[in-house]
Amino acid sequence: MIEEDPVHINDLQATILNCLGFDHTKLTYRHMSRDLRLTDVRGHVVRKMLG
Image (cartoon, rainbow, N blue to C red; front, side, top):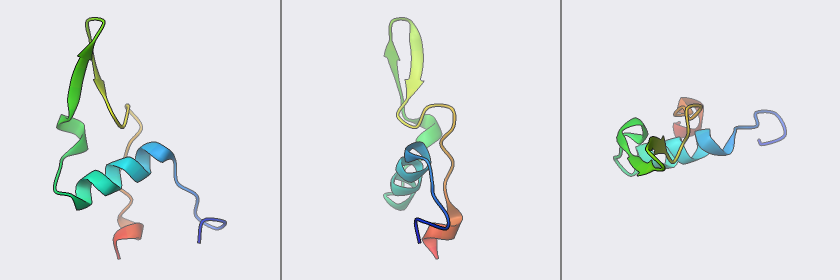
């Protein structure tokens, strides 16, 4: 339950992308001469959510 095990939005996005078959660490885009990721530097796949 969310009250017991909260997750950060970046972790949730990384987990959803993993379920869709994407490696969130390789999804980058260039903005103002910086490579950025949707999940920022904190996103980690939450294995506990997967089963």
